[in-house]
Amino acid sequence: MSDERALAERLGFTQGQQALEIGFDDDADRELRDSVAEVTGQDLLDEDADEQADVVLLWFRDDDGDLADALVDAGTYLADGGMVWLLTPKVGRNGYVEPGDITEAADTAGFNAMKSVTAGIDWSGTKLAAGRH
Image (cartoon, rainbow, N blue to C red):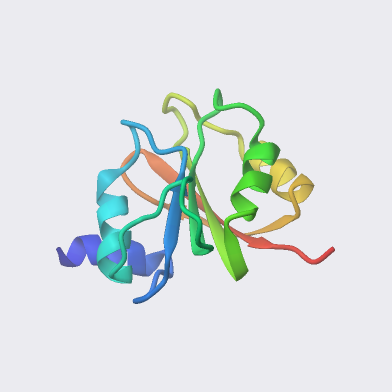
């Protein structure tokens, strides 16, 4: 379990944070999901939740539609000061999203890309902070 904890901790998750996920499907990284739940001590919320989240996990593949729209939608779930972790398939995987497309969509949706990391065997993560308008 310590490897599981390490993944979420490396992404900056802490005890007590509420995480919500959008775009979950069979290909989502279960180790990452389990790690987030373990570190935060909270079950992951889904899109039907009424409460605001500290962090939104947005699983997004190239054929999932418009990324900027998905990011705007994700932002509606965020509490003040919250972050979005945009999770996209790694290079060479089905559904890969070009980094330039991520940057453009984040800018359009009012987010600033903070950092990118490996977020699992098949997934990359880009940490996005809500920008000031």
